[in-house]
Image (tube, rainbow, N blue to C red; front, side, top):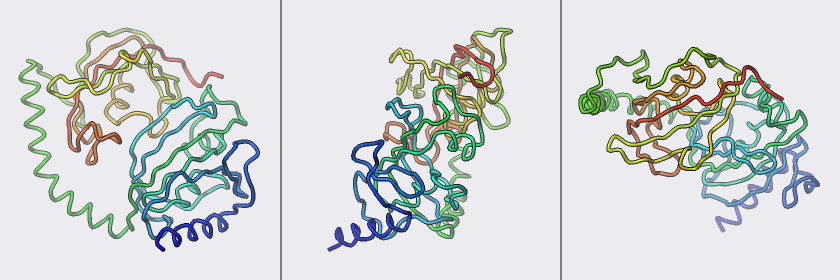
Length: 295
């Protein structure tokens, strides 16, 4: 009975957002009147879909229409009313807790209106992009605020403990450096006089992430796949790497000691490989900087 009720709720919801026919562009998908192509992959146990003002936790993947992944991660944020038809906000509002779905939306308005940046060179103006979303959690604004108040009370003590762990790591490596204002430690290894990275630049980087015990958890070099993205866009890299890139030049290499609030935060990464509140180390190289957006 619960599954039937959820299916009925999904049908009603899709009718409300303008579900009218099958997609002619993407087999197996349906399309809303606002132009979002969607496919429900699995149903969760949520009683009601998300709504504006809710705080949601989602596992999200961005792909080109040809299935090349250019972002994947766990994100928590507050939902807002869609500010144009066919926006990603409508996608979130179609899902209840535990649901998974795939969507195709227009890439150009996503970048220019939602992210307020320019369309990357690997998209054409009329291209679609694919977004896979798993709605992990939905909280009311009131519940989220209460949890944050309790969390901040606890984290004050944890923050002191993490500082001790970082100091022990620095001492063990015989590193005598001061953190940036945010708490990030940057240890230059190779420096150049080439282009600084600026917002809107297309940046190609190699990185290797590891725990304080030396175990590697991610490496573009081992995959032989440098990571390219437009610097300044939301949700591309963790805050510590984004800060470091903004202080580096093309061709430079640095080691970063990244406290948890600038890494994977209170929830860890989406795969569960990196636990919550874990400080990490990154070796970062700026391979190439292309000024502005290239077509």
